[in-house]
Amino acid sequence: MSNVLIVHAHPEPKSLTSALKDLAVETLAAQGHAVQVSDLYAANWKAVADRGDFLEQAQPGRLSYVAESHHAFTTGTQSPDVEAEQQKLLWADAVVLSFPMWWFGMPAILKGWVDRVFAYGFAYGVGVHGGERWGDRYGEGTLSGRRAMLSVTIGGRAPHYGERGVNGRLDDLLWPIQHGMMFYPGIQVLPPFAVYQSDRLTEAEWPAVAEAYKCRITGLFSDQPIAYRTQNGGHYDGQQILKPGLGAGESGTRIHLVQPGDPKEVLERTGREAARKMEACSGS
Picture (cartoon, one colour):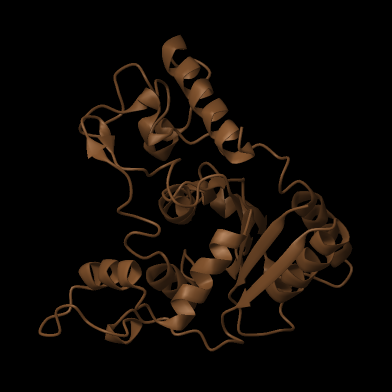
């Protein structure tokens, strides 16, 4: 069985978001998985990234958060709460982010969790940089071999987040989280689970939502992840620009998804990269 970390960000334990979190814990435990929950509001998580994140400061005269983050990570002088969350991520085989969509993104407390926990040297700034390779990121990195899924409650109606919806496509709104925060350090990302008109959900509608979520949680380790292009899989040139002939017929963020019409050599190289990672994860 596997280890699952649920990072939960809702201030109300009786909310729909919290009910989904509890259902995920119950479902995963019933499957035999080990589950840890980082309930950020219950833990009074410090959301602000500042000097307090470092037990000692390499350059006390002027704060460069990136430089101090790297120094603290490499010297073991991070704030204990940050290090504890990093250890949970390393323990986990999958991560579920549980949150309501507020102002087209995640609550500030969850963004603060990413800001502080994804330290330089831990989630970014890793790997060799040279030629077309800009380090280990976007499909590679410290957290590769893991999976992630977003569980998002949304007050608006589903059509508003569709192809021509006034709020924009949900995949585009979640792009900074799914591609920029999860896929960047190497995590394979599953399509999100979204509940629309969440503040209007009736008691009679809950069983159908619960059943749908149980189905998604059950497939956490078997469902196909979003087919993001890997940075070092031959898709991008030395300036990290998508190579000619790729993404034809698509626009916006969708050009960064592997397409059936991609040149054969890119698809084959992507397949070899996936096989290599599977071997690495299995220890063979």
